[in-house]
Image: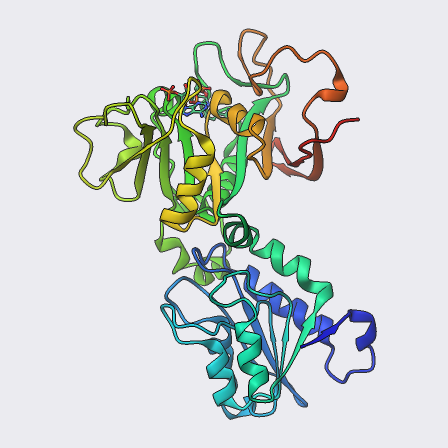
Length: 390
Ligand SMILES: NC(=O)c1ccc[n+]([C@@H]2O[C@H](COP(=O)([O-])OP(=O)(O)OC[C@H]3O[C@@H](n4cnc5c(N)ncnc54)[C@H](OP(=O)(O)O)[C@@H]3O)[C@@H](O)[C@H]2O)c1
C-alpha cells in the first residue's frame, strides 16, 4: 500500500484532498450507524464524480456499495475514495472489497484503516492481491478516526467513548437543594441534548436521577430540530432508540419508572450481592456486576456495554454523584457542560462532588475544545487532561 500526504499530490488530475473531504462530509451526514462506523465514499473518473454514497444504518448497504450502484459501468478503471478501509468479511452485508474488485475499479484511496480485527489490513490485502492500487491518505487519518471515535475506542480498548453531559447555573450548580433541576437550561440547549442522545448507543444514568426526576431518556425526533434534509438522511438511523442504562447497585428501580417503558432496550446494572428489583417489565435486562461502597464498578459496566451490546458511544446523563464518579475514575472522554444564566445559590447541588483539594495544580484539568451558544445558554465541550498538572 502506498502512503501519500496532501503535499505530494498537487500534480494529480483528481484533487485527492478535496475528494476525500467530500467523502468525509458524506459519512458525517448520518448521526449514527452504530454499531457500524460512519463511512462515506466518492467514485471519480477522468470526467469527474460518477458515484457517491454513505452508510445510512446497520444492516443497510455500505458506502462503497451505494456509490458503486450510482456509478454503474463508470466505476470501471475509476478511483474510489473511501473514508475507511473496505471490509473483507461477511457481516450483515457482503465484503465491499469483493464488490470493488467485481466493478473493475483501478485504485482505492482510504483515509483510515479499520481497527476491527475481522477487517484490519485484510480489505487492503484483498484489493492488492488482484492488482488494485491502494493508497492511504495519511493526512485524513485523524479525521477518519474522530468521525468514528466510539467505534475506534471500542475496537481498540474494548470500551465505548464516554461523553458526560451536565447542565449548570453560572454559580456551578446542577440542582436545587430540594433536588429540582427541571429545567436549568432552555429549549435550544435541550434540543442539542436530544441530538447528543441520537448519536449515542446508550444513555447511562444513576438511580437517584431515576427516583427523583423520573425521566424517559429517549430520543424524540420531533425535538431534534433537524433540517428536512437531515431528517431524510437520518430516517433509518432514528428508528433506533439508544439503550437506556440505569446504574442501581442495590436494585431499587421501581417497576413504574418512566425510563423502563415497555422494557425494550433497558439495562439495569446491579451489585452482584444485591437482589434484582421485582416487578419490572419482562424485557428489562438486569445485569449483576461487581460493586463497592460507591456503587457498581464503572469499568465493568463500560466493558459490558462494549462487548455485550456493541456500544460505540455512550452519554452519561446523571446527577453530580455518578457524573463525578465517572470523571474521578478517569473514564470520561468528553465533558459537555451547558451553562444557564441563572443563580441557584450555595445550598444547591455542586457540579463536581469532591472535596479536600489543597492545590490548584492538582485540580482536574480540561482542554476547552469548543464553545457554542444555544439560545440564552452556552455549551462548553471539554476534554479531560488526565494525569496533567500545572
Ligand atoms: N443538572 C443536570 O445536568 C442534572 C442531570 C441529571 C440529574 N440532575 C439532578 O441530580 C439529582 C440527582 O443526582 P445525584 O447526584 O443524587 O444522583 P445520580 O448521580 O443520578 O445517581 C447517583 C446514584 O447512582 C448509583 N450508582 C451506581 N453506581 C455508582 C457509582 N459507581 N458511582 C456513583 N454512583 C453510583 C448510586 O446509588 P446506589 O448506591 O443505590 O447504586 C448513587 O447514589 C437530581 O436532583 C436531579 O434532578 C441534574
